[in-house]
Structure formats: structure tokens, C-alpha cells
Picture: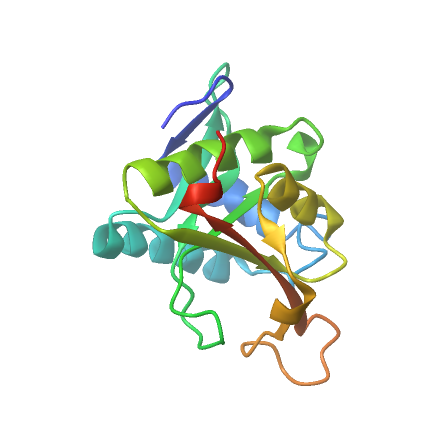
Length: 179
């Protein structure tokens, strides 16, 4: 997929090092339970590629059109945990900190939403994060995703008592999508 400033594509081995750097950056990972080791980061890349093979979609590596530089990912996932809203397809993103505040996550996510609804014929997408992750919540709102506090949930993969266990959930139905 291509947007005005981004190419969203499958992962390359050359993406692994900058992705690992992102995943070990305390600012980028502020709203995640822990920083990731190189091995954990590489496992996420492998998981993304496996997801593409199994489902025909997944997290796409994001690169800048102008420079070809890897800046993170934007894509679709099927969560592996059980919750009131699963099974579902989640849209998510993670960009290197130096690319925040430029609208790149929103630009990439718009292309992914359009792909999800018009090419994959999905009926609904969800997105979730910790309540304090205002940057990601703002992207969700720019996409037209709806938030209902009744959908807030405790993430089952995060231990009880952990400050990041509580999550907010946003939803977007195909009939509500306005590109």
C-alpha cells in the first residue's frame, strides 16, 4: 500500500535493527509493560510475517516514500487473547519517536482501514490501549473510531495489579467509515 508519504509493505531483514531500537526506546514504549530485547523484537517481526501468511494481512512495515527509511509499522492483527470483544481484528501502529506529531500514523492507519473494509471486506475494526496513551487515542478518534467506557477492559495478558492492565477499546464499523 502507498500513501502520499508512506509505503506499507511486508517486512525485510533490514527492518529488524531499527525495529529493535524502537522497541528498546523508553519513550516509544512508554505505554507498554516493558521494553523489548532484540530477541523479543525479532520474534514480533516473525509473528507479523506469520500473521500475513496465515490471514492475508498483518502489521505492515512502514517506510518513508522519500527516503525508503523504515519508521515503524501500521497494520492489522487478530488478538490471541479472549475478551468480551474477541474474536476481532485490531488496527495498531508503532512509529519511531522522531516521526511522531507529523500525522504519519493517521495517514498509514487510514490506508489500512480502507484496505480492511474495501479489500478484505471486514465488518469492524477495534483498537485498544491504556487510558493514558493520548497520542494513540487521538489517532483512533481521527479515524472516526467510537469509544464507549462500557467497553473498557482488563487486558488478560497483563498481570493483575499492573498499572497498565486497564485498557480502553475503540470500534469502527465499515458502514461508519468515511475515508
